[in-house]
Each structure stands twice: as structure tokens, then as C-alpha cells.
Image (cartoon, rainbow, N blue to C red; front, top):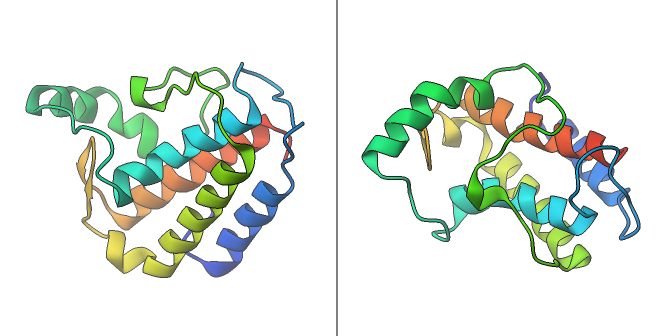
Length: 150
């Protein structure tokens, strides 16, 4: 798996994001491109903002037990995979604003680096290694950028 903390890989992801246009259409799924960008931003909102409520102790236990490995391993996501409710974006979103936010999140994550994320607590899964954080960030972005053909 590529390392999102490496500047060259972050730039590659940003270049792919920059190839998107408001007219980009998905190869699978039903989200618009703006909704997809907002959906990808949720991962970073859970890291950098206090916007989403944390799951309770029992729910975190279930998420760690049933979902964590799927999210942080190196296997690519399948098309049309299920997602958590807070990641479902139904409302219309501003393409340019969401794109700019996502690029900023990628840059911020790369600037903080692997050491910052080693052992950092995840919103839903508890402490993760920097490799698990990388896999989660890169795999999710790569999945949705491929969804929109970039």
C-alpha cells in the first residue's frame, strides 16, 4: 500500500483530486462527485474536528471487533460497500469547497507525518498504528478516486 505520509504520494493523491470536475460521474454507486468529496472529508473531520459524536463504549467494542480490520487492512474496498451512517451524504454539497477541504486535509495529514499518528486514538477503533492510519486514509481515498475514474 502506498504511504500517504510521503510527500510524493500525497501529491499524487492531490493531483488525482484536482482532475475531478463538477461533471465527473461515478463508475459505480450513486453519490455525486461533490457528495463523494464530502464523504471522504468525514474521515478527516473525525481526526481534526469535534463534529461527529463518538460511539459509546459498547458500539466501539463492536466496531473494533467487526469493522476495524476491514477498514485498516491493505485489501481494497469492494464496490458499493456498506458505510457508517455519518459517512452517508444525502444533501447537495459545494464541489469546490469540498475539494479544497479534502486537499487541505491530505496536506495537513502529510505534514503531521507518521510519528504523529503512531498510537493516535481513532474516533471509532481506539489507538491505531501509523500503518493502520495510512491504510485507512490511502485506501479510502484511492477507492473513491477510482470510483470517479481518476
